[in-house]
Structures are given as C-alpha cells and as structure tokens.
Length: 305
Ligand SMILES: Nc1ncnc2c1ncn2[C@@H]1O[C@H](COP(=O)(O)OP(=O)(O)OP(=O)(O)O)[C@@H](O)[C@H]1O
Ligand SMILES: [Mg+2]
Image 1 (cartoon, rainbow, N blue to C red):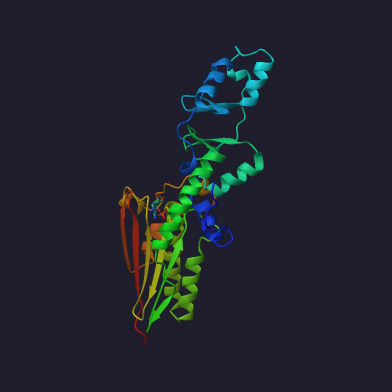
Image 2: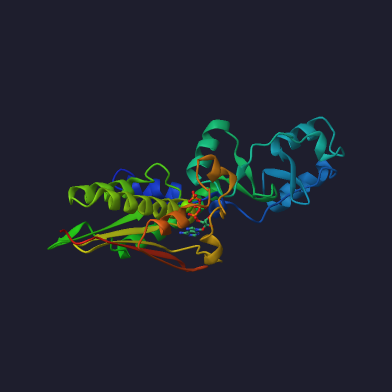
C-alpha cells in the first residue's frame, strides 16, 4: 500500500481530532457473524470457514454470552470434542466497548488487553457490532481523506479586528474533552481585555461554555463564532449534525439525551440550553435532524455613560 501522503508529525492535530471525533459506531463492522451457545464446535468450524472470520461472539436475541476464537476451535479439534456445544469452549467474560465511545478510548482498550476484537454493545446492552483492527484501519483511512478535503474547503478565520469589531471562529471537535472549554475561556479573556462589564462577561462566558460543551458532547463537530462590537456581543454555535429532533423538548430544564458514559464525565444535567438562554438577551435555536444545529445568542452592551 502506498504511504498516506501526509505525515503525523506535520498534522498531529488532524489525527488526534479524528480519534476523538470518530466513535465506535463509526468504525465497527455491523454485519456481525454470531453463533448460539448450543451450536456445536463443528458448526463453529463451518461458520468460520464460510464467513472467513477468526473469532465469533456467542449471541442469542442480541444478548452477548461469550466469544469463541480460532484457538478454542483448535483445542476442540485436538481433543476430539467437535460435537460439544460452543458454551463449553467460549470465553464467558468478554471485554466489550460501547457504541458511543470515542475511538481514542477504544485504541487504549486494544493496548490494554491485547485482544484482537471487541464486541460492541448499545445503551440497551444489545450486541450491535464488532471492532477489529481492520475495521478501524479501513474507516480511519477513509475519514482521514474525507477530513482533509473538508479542512481544505473550510474557512476558519483567524481573529480579525475592523475598527471596534472583533471576530473569531473556533473549531470544536466532537468528543474532544481535552480541549473542551478552551474557546469559552479565550472568549472570556478577550472580553476582559476589551474592558467589558464583568457581569456581562460572566453571562457571555456561561453561554459560550454551554454551547461549546454541546458541540463537544452532542454534535459531530462544529464551530463557535464570537463577535464583539461596541454595542453588542454575539455567539454562534453551528454544527453539521446530528441535529435535534424536538427543539422544544431540548430547551426544557433537565431534559437530556446524554448517555451514562457522558454523565460519568459530569455532563448531561439537561441544563445547558436553558442556562444559555437565561443569561442571554436574545436566544435563537434552529435545528434539523440530519442537517445540524445553529444557536445564536446576543447580548447588548449598555452604552458607556
Ligand atoms: N449541538 C447539538 N446537537 C445535537 N443535539 C444537541 C445539541 N445541543 C443540545 N442537544 C440536545 O439537547 C439536549 C439538551 O441540551 P442541554 O445543553 O440543555 O443539556 P445537556 O447537554 O444534555 O446537559 P448539560 O448541558 O446540563 O451538561 C441534549 O441532551 C441533546 O439531546
Ligand atoms: Mg449541554
């Protein structure tokens, strides 16, 4: 295979961003080959030969009971136990991953356990796919090229100042918890430098943080644009999906779709959007499933006395 025409050293951020952006569900194989507990090791042999796989999750009604590998098959062959059920040979304690997890976490799972495949569970504990080194590689390469062309077409402007108007757009990557909050912090510092009233800075910083976190937690990645003029401050959070099915519901206090994993990181109280609205003079949200979400916020600055 030809080498990828960019080096990780020149574009470390691109690789890192992809690792945070892609989730297990993006890289898993969905055409899952499974076997039942009561199938024989002979059945397993035929399945492995016909489907060309070297490990098979033991699944019934989407529930995962274990995993059998080629090593188990060899053991059954050597000991003449090919008519025994799979349940006698399977490994019953299986390391699994959740479909919502970022790829970055899965890669560390690969490192930690040295297994070659991990069944994927959804929030209802159903088996929905499997991740292997191959499924990850294929998807990563594809996304890499896609992301490169997307970046080439994207115009993220450096900060610009025209007279009294300051303007800056921040890119916010999906699941990048390491950098989450940096844009909001920088916006806060900029307002301080410009000598804006501290009570307004506090309000804008809260709104910026909530919008930035929603981009990280819920969106496929997007931008947070900040504009400060003499008379007003504007924040626009814009993403390219997945969109919100019911905006009215999303605006209710306590309503959240955050999964357990996100909640374990301290997010998902369902307070972000209501909070952002409360601290803003004007609040607009437009969202469409499949297209994305745009939240626009305005705060009027009182004229200096
Ligand atoms: N940019 C977005 N893209 C897709 N869905 C979003 C986006 N922003 C918010 N949502 C949806 O709206 C819901 C409510 O958002 P909100 O910020 O109020 O709460 P939360 O993010 O779930 O929790 P908290 O902000 O308290 O940590 C989210 O759970 C999510 O379903
Ligand atoms: Mg939120």
